[in-house]
Picture 1 (cartoon, helix red, strand yellow):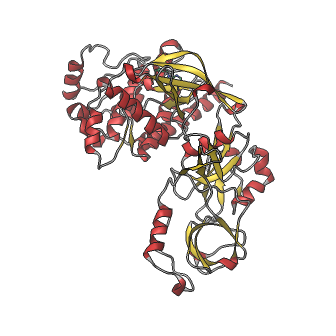
Picture 2: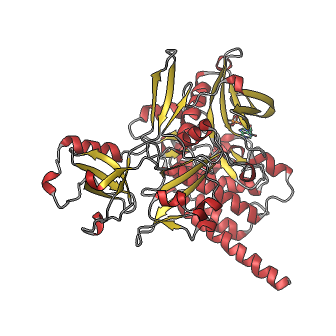
Picture 3: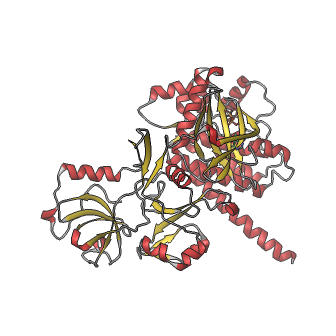
Length: 514
Ligand code: ATP
């Protein structure tokens, strides 16, 4: 996106460079501008709603001034500000450049599928769930990639085991045409406007679009509130620091969605545990990614005095247990794919300035086909904010998972960084090769582990792990100096490349066998 500067036009005198306009622009450029508002309804009860709409205009004619301010008839623009009765300040979606255009050359697009009022995937997911119409869709901005859009579709689950689909759309920098960035079956489709996209027969044959989601989605109560009466508890599936985790069905409209419910009774826990639970809820609200367990909401069971955290159900539970009961793992190919999933989830956390601080197999959950790993348990996580040092100190008074913790953090908890999460990731890889056994199996006391790590000792290669895997992936994560450790981006690239090499090797091998 352009900076706060206005782009010069043919009629520069018409552009008021007032502070108000500059302020409008800055507001516009601030991301994640979700508008969750409440208003009284007829019965005087408050209704909350999420405003998804932002005005979109279509060009009535074409204009060619310079590369930045040229557009075609039918191009779409997002409104930044009304300059005066005649001129509007807009963003040209295809080129992402700012333009000042006479309103006579524009038409308000009343049929637009664009809903740019929120780019928060969590909020969008919740709106799609609330609207509850299979195939209902919208197009929003991506909140992880600037200048990209996402086509989000609700409830088309069964085959894909997901409640919603999200297709990333980028713009080709040369042709300035939009295209689908990730789905190979959509790779030949490109378009110049989002209206054109949703009218395209080829697209509609491949993606089950039904209707555009309304501009405003209403909620009876808070966006994240789930009424306890809509939950049917089935059986316990785990036990953690806070209490039991249950499998339940969440009745939502005509559907029943399987969910995991983490329960906390505040009367049975100390302040640190309650704080940790609250932090987990607050963090999960802001994180939405395919490799992070999805947060659905919170319920209050008044009778039992319990707070319930409701998330996506991961049918195969945690990785530690899974490894113990499955003979076919560890197997290098599967481990590479698991590690790649974790890397992608961690990369997303890094982009969100979030440190996990408790990366371990017990906190990695497996999907129902056992193919995807997602990161869970944000009880120790923190969003890095340079101004809240005191708050961070408070957080650090919690217990530390010693076996997974980097030396600089064992030294001083204020040293937590994404590179200490990289250290934990290296230990997770060891834990996987140990089939879920605790790392440093010989060491029984925390003091001896601490002393070992401080002495510069590096965890030995597990017997089943190849030298290549150990040297290429594990050792770099366990460098004593945090700055020498690779980033999750580099690790992800290494894993992806290795995965592809392995596929190619398998393909050639199968040809030889034939
Ligand atoms: P820790 O002790 O590391 O803090 P925890 O106490 O937070 O972990 P929980 O997150 O409460 O642990 O989870 C306990 C167990 O419940 C997990 O190990 C897992 O087996 C199961 N579990 C938790 N969440 C889910 C989920 N979304 N889907 C399936 N199983 C889950």
